[in-house]
Image (tube, rainbow, N blue to C red; front, side, top):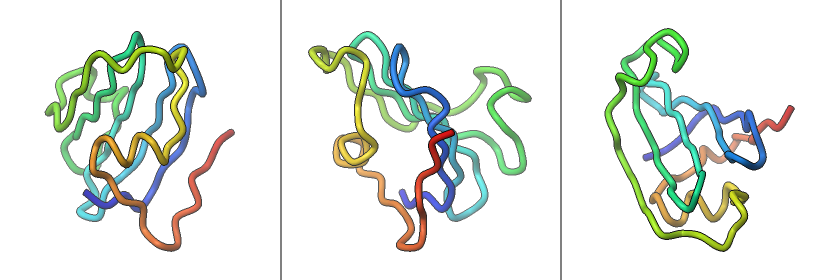
Length: 92
């Protein structure tokens, strides 16, 4: 899955990102307590509007030892995500 937008909303406890893939569907990525999950929402929505009623696209458990921190490069490798070439992940 290729992401065209990505913002890190928290760096740890949990590490999480909001993004959007090529078809406009929003993406929510979260790493907490050794569990990495990637959820996909319907087009033109965001995670707050839809609550937790999104499709689970990827989940991996037992990834402890990272203290709930994980760089986006590692997330992409584990979840088979790619970033658009011109994408510069935003961290507020």
